[in-house]
Length: 388
View 1 (cartoon, one colour):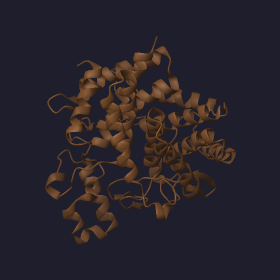
View 2 (cartoon, rainbow, N blue to C red):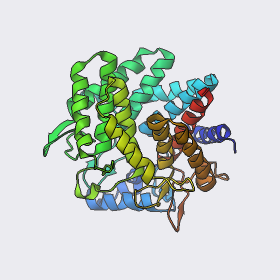
View 3 (cartoon, rainbow, N blue to C red):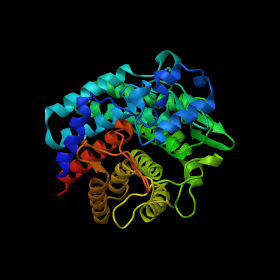
View 4 (tube, one colour):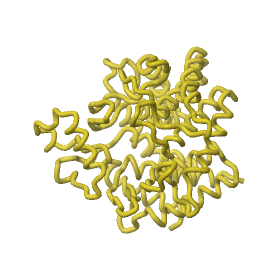
């Protein structure tokens, strides 16, 4: 299928559900489980969530998990819609983006509690390190939503989008700035002391971007200071582990891509060459360790599986934004050809979630898979159309 047509097929599929859908982590939205005494147990919540995340059978309709919009997913769709609008000037893309942007304005986490613009997920979320109730803001959702709203302002000149997007940096600086165990970083969620590199770097990148737009020298310096903490943690071979906890010592592709894209945004925003060597080493490691000869994008540096379209989409952004050389575009084309052949389900009009060596998980996850694929492909289509 021609790439732009496939991109539209993905979009039309999610439009039918009004951009609502299931998510790998939405198991705790189950009305059946919520009414049971097991919900009070941290370990039962974790087990329940992980069971539904890992299952290749979608039990959600049976256990009372509704299809819903995810704020981060809506941010991704807005960014993709604006890419398609820039390429085609077709008004429907912009109309959809505005509708989703206006919806996001209504979904901010409690402004009385958090004081500044921020967003969380539409489900309770239990991790090994912490529990996050529905709506509690997190840094990744906040950054992606803010990027989307700012991009929407650039097209519409509606200052509400810009002001809300820029205000989120105040939330990151005032609420998520953390000093703990010898590290200085932006926490994933308020009150958390776990240092996760991709979360902290995306926070630093967005604070740097806002600092560049508002001439805020204090914010700019804080962004550099925080980013340096993750730069210091880069291994000599260019790799990053996910975080500092003992169960965060894995190295995966899409979070490595996050780190590199975030550092590149920070570099461009503050016009600094301070992290050039870090980006160069990290990018070399990324290209050497996360791609195979057939075009497959590996999840882990030492394991081809699981194959995951989230990794594919992030590879598009990393290879073009951080690399951008002819050989990088050639690799992107190879990756996309592979992903369409191996991961797309033509009868269902969506990409599957994951493939392991033995099983394929065909569940349609809107935020994790389709939103990322749509945004990644729309971005590639636009960049390709603008190349001389």
